[in-house]
Image 1 (spheres, rainbow, N blue to C red):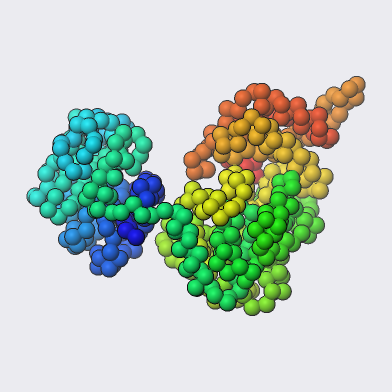
Image 2: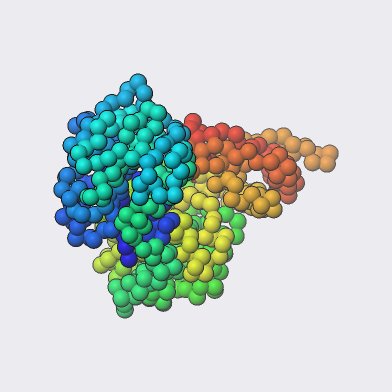
Length: 510
Ligand code: XMP
């Protein structure tokens, strides 16, 4: 399998570059520039290297620099933005600051005839985001593109197969960005398009079959996408030697616990232990109002319950986790010993001893994880489900948590989700749910006065959950949901729609 190294200099689009390469069915992996030496790059037999973007200026001493020996490995390199400037700097060109004429946004790009621009028109739109620019290409390089403000928008040294572009081919605003990446991958690096998620899944199953043969594997299944896909994949590899423990803390959405049990136990025929611990969690949470205390209690109790189950199982050889590629990149920079700092697995190693960690999804992006899940027969509603916080409805019941409030919220939330589904809007908001506010409000039913809870509906659209906008849901959908909730759920007298964005608000209310 041919592979491309995305050498990470800290730019904002780095994961996107790897995604775009994989979209072309070429395997790409991201490594920080601090993580790999030119010698190791040679040993790994990469077919090509992409230098990513990064901080503003190569002359800034705190900016990442790299061993120029990489330019002489004989492996084709494409530098993007900062990566382009870094290549110029390392090869002896001149990078200057364009304080007064920095380019940002869609820009007209003029390209020369060149292998990198095959099937790209001489004039097209590209995406620029830079202050510094290459004022003089290094010797051996020729300038192959320019914009009105940037005299060297792309450069090439065909002898050493070194290429640089000032613009961002990986973002969709660059009209021919995909074509340019394809030219680099297939015409310059001569990669084969042989990376397919289905082949990769099959290889993973074989790998874990060998690695975990005869071993007992334990997985904490939450019913979320990552742990679910990790579970089915490992189940194909080790069968009943995989034990999944599903701690049902009772704070799940309506019927969710039963759905998880049915999917894994009945449909997938897996070795699943469901622990019904609702009472235990509600007792611990009784009277607790502070959201962070709620989270802490749930996190700790989760571990206690999980530990108790694990101890009953006897010796465990491997602990499996649903860590995915973005987790690996963002946390441990590829260090497999790092335990995902997710509340429901952190802290486990203290009490349960195991020899190894199995993280079958650690090289896959979220959409690839979904593709594997679908391939292995998981239902759509599970594979494409919206994110759900570990502490569950506890952070959607404002104030103290009681069984009565939990039931009210589960009903209201189920109605909201049903109406979204009926309107075929499941994939429009990235997350949508109901919140039981602690406010009461007067209502009227028939001739009688009621005094019930106020429920807030929340729906947001976001790329990364760091920022989010409230969804402009059609009024008809909101009206239907509101009318059904106030009529069907006794104890709720009013429904409001949350029109706050993040920041300054957060997605969850607590
Ligand atoms: P906020 O409320 O921080 O939410 O804007 C951003 C995303 O994170 C989820 N979230 C959590 N997930 N444990 C989790 O596993 C938590 O304690 C938690 N708090 C928030 C939230 O649902 C949204 O997707």
